[in-house]
Length: 303
Image 1 (cartoon, one colour):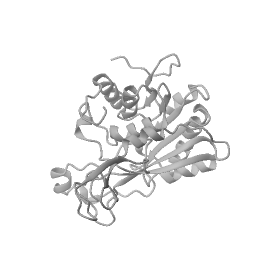
Image 2 (cartoon, one colour; image 1 turned 60 degrees about the horizontal axis):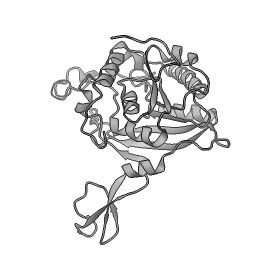
Image 3 (cartoon, one colour; image 1 turned 30 degrees about the horizontal axis):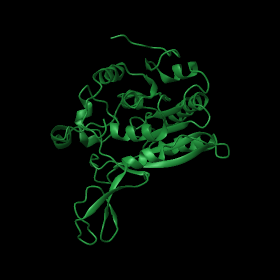
């Protein structure tokens, strides 16, 4: 397998094994259409982080449930180091992305507010916060707080609140993906899984499409998408598919400075976009290569 460790502007797509902080400064200003990325959340090593001491001796969670916390070197920072790291890569993204290009970033409560704060300080227009509801989220094993079953996606425009205009938003394409049901009798709108109306009992339900909401009920990554290997924070194709279809156009270049398992390159390949994907860890670079080569023949809608 040939390994690419540097950026080449002449390539249709770039998959790069390197540190994004070393590669981003090499990319020409305003040369990339959009950024869609899932950066480190700093779950593994923030200041004051406590170890779950009883976990190692708990056979139920470590054995039967095969529970593994996200505990990775690439995701471990002090609070100050993480803030500095986030500011550095975001400022490079602001330089690289074209004016009014979309910047879409995943996060959890560990990091999303820091990212939002930087976007606001830099004067970027924030369009939406998307809440991703993971119906099959792993339970909270401490029993001392609510089960954390959501992640967040912040959607910003690479321009100021005043100057932002003409950003890409494919309203109709997203509406086609948001199919629900409507009761013919009481006219209530329902989740697409309903077989009958819970309000009036009518079983004559009509499928309709509504504008996409900012609450996405998408299952976590299925095992069928892990056939080439596993990544501890792999995102499902369905959620990346919605973002790519809704926020980019065919032939657009999308950069992901933290490519992870390569779901973004995989989806861009399918939907005729181009990508610059940077991954620091060799094992995940190899995973991305395997997934792209296999082209993931998955049983998902429109795949």
